[in-house]
Length: 121
Image (cartoon, rainbow, N blue to C red; front, side):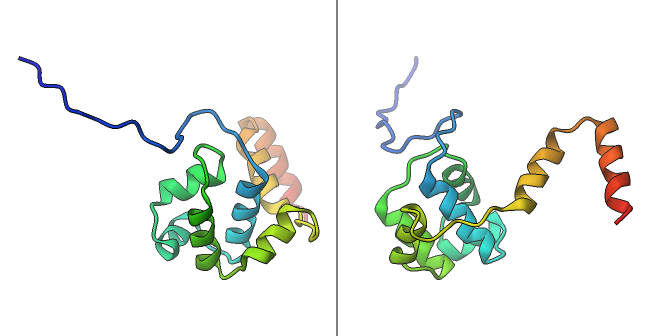
């Protein structure tokens, strides 16, 4: 005999599909500017590291309460956050993170070539 549990549909979106928002990008920048890993940021904020990852990568929705929780944990104000969102304050490019993402996609042969170039500096 099968027993069915009464379950409620989750109100938050968690998806394999990424919808990267400006808010998510800014939160990731703010975390990285404090030199926090995802795991350490999660401890500071009081959420799971999976939650931090999903929010930064556009895999779940961000609500105002959670945004404030992130900002408080990172030591930023809502005004500073909105200046970055609205473009009043330029969001610096994150060359290091962008280079890491490119390196992750390279084949082993190309990675060896890049390594040789980097070692020449």
